[in-house]
Amino acid sequence: MSKNTKKKKGNGEGSVYKYKNGYRGQIVVGTDDEGKPIRRSVTGNTIKEVNEKLTLIKNSMITGTYIAPDRITLPELTRQMLKDDLNMNYIRESTHYRHIETLKRIEADPYMRTTPIQKLNYTGVKEYLLTETRAAQSVIDKIYMMIQRTMREAVKRKIITVNQLEDIRKPKSVQHREKVRALTKDEQIRLYEVLTTEDINYSYQMLLSMLTGMRMGEVNALTVDDINLKMKTISISRTIARDLKGAAFVSQTTKTENGTRVIRIPETALPLVREILQCAEDSKYLFLHKGKLINTSQVNMQFQRVIEKYGIIDKKVKGKVSLHSLRHTFATRCIEAGMQAKVLQHILGHSDIRITLNTYCDAFESFQRENIAIADEYLAGMGIGSGNLRLLKTAG
Image (cartoon, rainbow, N blue to C red; front, side):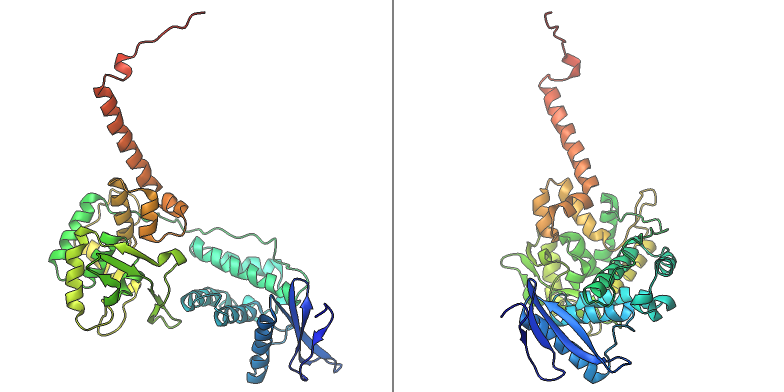
């Protein structure tokens, strides 16, 4: 098919033709004030991809949800893009819900919600971004990236000719972000004693996270079949996510691609795992509350009550203690015991070893200092050290 040869369809069904390194499709979506047809263009790597995009437009026209390009707002275009991503399997359902939560913040602003993309200006969007500076920096980052991605898409779809927000700066959060830390050895011992001797909701999940390094969403998504006592392994392939109404559901994939993994059950955790299996009885999932799935927020609230009630935390130690501290605690103890970073990366399900090294750099540095001290002591025992140093003068 030549570059200018179109694949004809019926009236109003759109046409597809070769375009640059892919394909392009056009469809009539209405008429202007003079009665001339208004055409909408889409592009894709394959004919199938273009046809799927054209079908989405046709369906939205049939259901009355189609919005003309000259009236579409940034949040409306973003919703279309996120729906396309989900329908075409570019993102998971749990990721889609997280993006929608970010989008809701943009939609809550009157200017962003009602102003067509063509009329958005630098000053108006900057004023909106400044209203978000009280949010966490991670939230601001997501909002900024969402706005910029949508504006780039608007240029691609020829809704606008240039991204008038391309040079807008991303604001910084006024929040002081306190780094989440691991529990000290004394804090961990106190928490372990409380969780194993007191009647506390979700104590099994907290213990399992602290003894294996699993994310709480991964823990709550475990099934009986994920546990292999004979091989002493746990298969991790799912996580708990929340839908738009906040209800927990099982995402059939983990947080990251590398999150899908098989880890060995430490000997210290084997008695706990056996007890959990006995309590699960005939249930598919290991952890349910009144027959329903448990989300991370539920466990986190209980964790905060426990550490406060039983005085677990040493207030003199700097850093924030949250439910994620259980995972940090496991990793820190592994580093202190001499575990290699590459092994720890697999156990934790990090996509890149740099994440492991950057997250636990303090623990690795401390471990390095301790081992250098051991080496120094060993060398001193051999008579090597500054106390026996004799300076040799060179001739000349």
